[in-house]
Each structure stands twice: as C-alpha cells, then as structure tokens.
Image 1 (tube, rainbow, N blue to C red):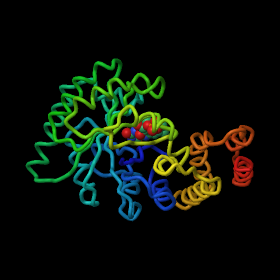
Image 2 (tube, rainbow, N blue to C red):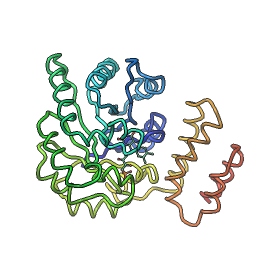
Image 3 (cartoon, protein in one colour):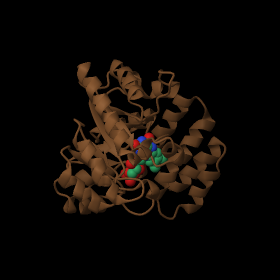
Image 4 (cartoon, rainbow, N blue to C red):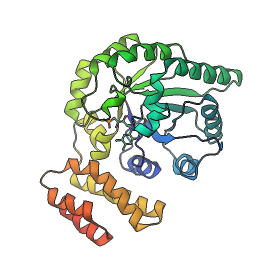
Length: 311
Ligand SMILES: Cc1cc2nc3c(=O)[nH]c(=O)nc-3n(C[C@H](O)[C@H](O)[C@H](O)COP(=O)(O)O)c2cc1C
C-alpha cells in the first residue's frame, strides 16, 4: 500500500511536512495545499516558501494547483518544473462556496465540457513542449448528485492522467455525511487510471474495514486522521500504537517549527490551536484543558494547558 498525506490548507504545509518526515517518515507522497495562480504569473510569497526546494528536502512533495484556466495551469507548471517538481496535482475537490462560485475546485466539475477542453489544452501543450510532467487529479464525485461522477470519470479516462485521487463526497456535503463507497466502487471498475482512495479513515479499524471491502486498492490518502494521530500509518502497518511521549514530541517540534518559520509567538499559537482542533480528538477526558488551549492567549497559558492535556 502506498500512503499519501492529504493537502490541508494552513495545516499540512512545509513546517508540518518536515516535522512529520523527521519523526515518522512513513508516507510515500506529501501533497501540498493548493496554489491558486493569478494573472500576475508569479508565485505568491506563501507559495514560493511552500515550494522552495530548501523547505522540502528529502520529502516527495507534490504541488497542487487550483484553477480552471489552462494557461495559468501551464504557466504554474513551468515554474514548478524549474523548482524541480515533476508531478503536479489538479484540485477538483475544494467545496468552499467562494471557490465553487468561480467554477474552480469541485465547482469545475459542474461543466464537464469545459473540464474536457481544459485537459485537452494542457495535455496537448505539454506534449508539444515535450514536457514529461505527471499530472494527477484530486476530485470529489460531483456537486449535487452521485450520478454526476459517471461523466466526470469518462473525461478523466480520455487523458493521460497519472492517478486519480477520489474523495467520494459531493460538493454540497462539505464534510458531512459519509463517503459514497458505491461510487468509489464503480469508479474502481471503470477507471483506466490508478485510483487512490481518500476520506474518513481515522483509525486502523476503519482502514482494515476499507481494505477488506476493496482489496485491490493500492493507494490511500489520509488527512485529518494523520493530523490527529501521526502514528496512524505506523499503526496500520505494524499494529503498534503511538506513545504519549512520541505524540508530545510531535507537538513540541511543530510548535518550535512554527515559531521559527513565522517569527511570531502569536501566529505560532494560532497555528497550534488549529492543530488542536484535530489533535484534541486523540485524547479522552481532557475537555477542560482543551478548552484552556482554545482560550490561551499567552505562551505560558498555552504551555500549561498543553501539559494538562498530556497529563
Ligand atoms: C482544513 C482543511 C484544508 C484542506 N485543504 C485542502 C487543499 O488545499 N487541497 C485539497 O485538495 N484538499 C484539501 N482538503 C481536503 C483534504 O485533502 C481531504 O480530501 C479531506 O480532508 C478528506 O480526507 P480525510 O478524511 O482523510 O481528512 C482540506 C481539508 C481540510 C479539513
């Protein structure tokens, strides 16, 4: 099985990737949170930092692009190629209303004709320029109805996409309801590309159940499950559960990493609070201290609340 770390905006950026790689080193690919190209044709400061080779040493990182504009996609690919990336992912999953309104992310799935032309242009131009970039997609199954995926998959099947990562939810689901395993199963039978499954695997038990249902799947992407329990992949592979000490080290290294990268205690605290939204789920009976973490404004308050949780 190949394991991928999911892109999570503001969560699994380069600081996170480096800490995870240093402590756990058990995923095959790290997908970067999306880059949204603009007309200016330059990478934003944040995207430059995120993709800088010195911030991604030793990790197999895959940049992701969120656009519906073939030229902007190709332009960004050029810049990423220059930085040494040979695999790029297209975001067809983002459910956020502002993104969908612009027909990007999962919003791009609403117009299959446009999606078809987009792929036609990018693969034709890359072929002409003899660029050997792998282009993968990460997709939801539609906006409103699971039946939408039938046509979407037909389009993917027409192009040399390197892999299709499916998070089988609809745009309208956001993160509600459960992933639609029927649609995933159908896609498994119909896709000419390798498929990767993504969605709601938070425990070894859920992983085992999934694999029992889909024994032919060879790629799994995990997001919130890893952020909450960075020992998840090891547990799945070996049965060994993460220790409290290892979890504390993960926390401490991330906190130190954010302080250094952001140069601001306040910003680092904010980042850590976001992390706790997921990490908090790994603890039971700690609600009192988790609440203190949410309220902490000063590093001392935060440190004391964190100690409370770990105790
Ligand atoms: C806070 C947050 C940020 C996310 N950012 C991205 C993103 O930048 N690109 C993307 O393709 N998906 C993004 N996702 C979706 C995840 O990659 C993943 O598909 C989703 O969380 C389901 O997988 P999981 O159940 O393993 O977490 C994000 C999800 C969350 C919760």
